[in-house]
Image (cartoon, rainbow, N blue to C red; front, side, top):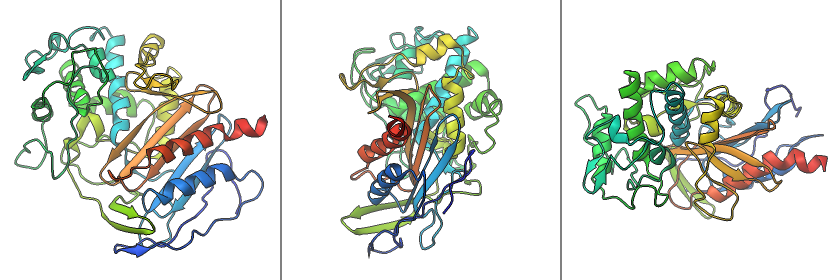
Length: 387
């Protein structure tokens, strides 16, 4: 197997056959590589995929080159490793795009971070203990608004759909606000998708465009992200080529996969509706952290973090997470999960990058720890080789 440079792919195909019935997995078949084979990252990817979906892939590198490793398969009952240019649903990585547009509106003087959301959306965040005159735009961006945790689901927890099966942002927000506040505004951190649904309404109000059009025209198109899509309500198709998403669980060596449900993207809207690829996500976060999407002042605001877990060196900014790596480097990014997919992208200021996807989102024993270990290994691998 050869390693190709300059953003072409290295695919290391690992893993056993995945089936749509209860199956005992066999031993992994490891690809052989030579030279700079990224063996530490390959081992971390293998460990992650063993607890994740039928397949997993990482697209990583530095400012000079990029490479891709794959484990398992993007389509069950085939030997088809996930590629870095294949589409998948990015879930909450959408939030960083939404935050970027809000900060653009701050740059344009149309929105103030510390103004109450009621100034822009009067009467929206109100009732059931909520007071939109005390909740600022910053609070919503940083999940310190006190809004209760809210996780829409295609089956269990959904707002009332329209007759055509799409969902209105305002109705989704009302559904989330039916749960009482968890804290006073600014008092503590609680991750709530409803914060970013409210922000989607803010974007629509200020730009006078549907949020999918605003993010497309302001971020996706200017950056030339040709394989990134914010689908319009009613557009349920996943562009080709695509990573197939699955539901499933692993219990020891046994696993069960079934195709993920098709749902209308407007259910997740500005908090999780977007579609992209490992390559495009890398380009987006690199552009954002290089100051090519928002002003330097707004980027600095995005990188002011709330230490949700004090002592870790990380924290939660405005649509960006801060991660302290084992090689004494800071990385920025976000993760995302929706039915069928679990992903995360991190980038550093010196050009290192790593973006990961697996094609299952399991709420039981979700492998967050192994995902972070994989990202850390990839981002610190070249540092350890130079030391």
